[in-house]
Amino acid sequence: MATASVAFKSREDHRKQLELEEARKAGLAPAEVDEDGKEINPHIPQYMSSAPWYLNAERPSLKHQRKWKSDPNYTKAWYDRGAKIYQADKYRKGACENCGAMTHNTKSCMERPRKVGAKWTSKHIAPDEKIETFELDYDGKRDRWNGYDPATYARVIEMYEHRDEARRKYLKDQQLKKIEEKNNNPNGEDEVEVSDDEDDDEDALKVDEAKVDESKQMDFAKVEKRVRTTGGGSTGTVRNLRIREDTAKYLLNLDVNSAYYDPKTRSMREDPLPDVDPNEKFYGGDNQYRVSGQALDFKQLNIHAWEAFEKGQDIHMQAAPSQAELLFKNYKVIKEKLKSKTKDTIMEKYGNAASEEELPRELLLGQSEREVEYDRAGRIIKGQEMALPRSKYEEDVYINNHTTVWGSWWKDHQWGYKCCKQTIRNSYCTGAAGIEAAEAATDLMKANIARKEAIEETPAPTEEKRLATWGTEVPEDLVFDQKLLTEALKKEDERKKEERDERKRKYNVRWNDEVTAEDMEAYRMKKVHHDDPMKEFLH
Image (cartoon, rainbow, N blue to C red; front, side, top):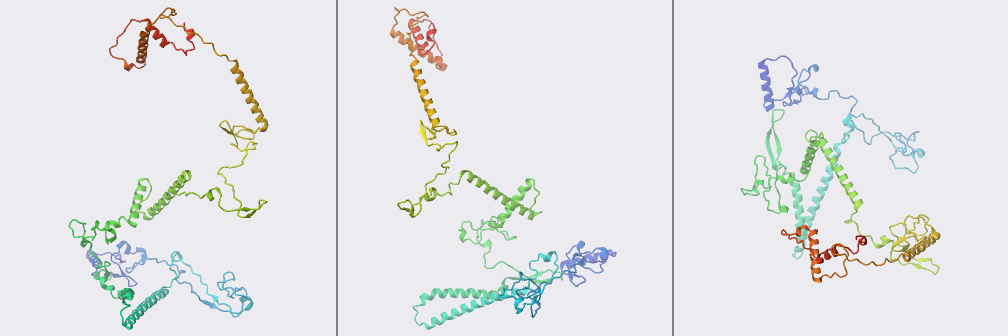
């Protein structure tokens, strides 16, 4: 209630006031009127409708909620387009040299440049423009429709009406022409050829008639309802946007076990016809809108806001949706930049074999099949001189005073420099003196090797002493049984194998303390190595 009286009210007056407010809200009583005769919405809370005590408001009003301190200098007037104020008969000093107007200079003149300006001819002096200055407020400077004349839109409507009228007239003429041709042609030979064109024209006419009659059929979906207004309620019109020709959702599939239809919200989340071809389906359930279009983007925005909040960022989708959307856009831009940077780094390091195409030989080696003709002196008569193929490495680069490149000399499976015959890559060139010194050193080394080989004497062969059975020298008359000696050697080999691998030893071991001369000879033969250089000093 917007009453301004603050006087004391009795309980009965207060009860009547509450009943009046309830009646106004229900539309049974007329709404309260302010000083200007405008109705006050009864649903406005009291803390908004009650005026402050220092305004001394005598009647109910909502002026205290409006901007009552208006700027006296502000005006909604706009520039008078194309207005002229004065037109002189002769040129005036300081005016535009091109057209003769005083309101601008020659540089900012919008008239086409004359061959001889008005300053020198004093003819056809242009009138002065009307210059106005407005002081706009904050909203006025940012109003994109400021100064727009709505009457100019009538030209756009008129243009479309003329176009539709011309189209209807053309289609009508075409129809009359077809009828005349049909009447003038008594034979029906050409009817088959023209039948397709006639059908197309008739369809176009039907479409045009449908467009014309659309304005007459706009009221087919009007529903009369009682709408509560501030004036106590009146009857308004509410348009139902649903087309009555569409099949209802619950009639698409009459199976009891099909998708559930909620009559209260008129929603069917699941697909009523899941086995039908998607290209032939008109309706696929309400869930298809949740995973497509802007709904999917909104879901990703919510997920990003939740994850960012869990990581410590001050972001909330419901409290600051603009901030959340801006942060999500920045996140996608940064993620895309990081992804492209990583991709470029990998491609720069390893290359991209999938996209790289094999270069033509002409571009790779700088060669072509172009024919070049020379004269006897070697000058080019026709064509172009063939370019020598170049490698990807630097050519003819001489370092460390060398006169040839590395790899120009080969000897003993080693590369080197031909100028000094050195096989060390970073060596300094010594020229012919170095070659002579190297050859002298080689000859000296060969002579030393030959002299050493001549001095060395072959060692005299030493006789092998046969040791006796018990450690003494073997007597010359000692004779061994070859059969027993062969068996002793086999036993010695088996004993050595058992010593090397303890796993081959059996559980029942039998020891034989009797040692024969053949056993000792076999032990000696296996024990002493002929290639031992210290065997001469053992005994």
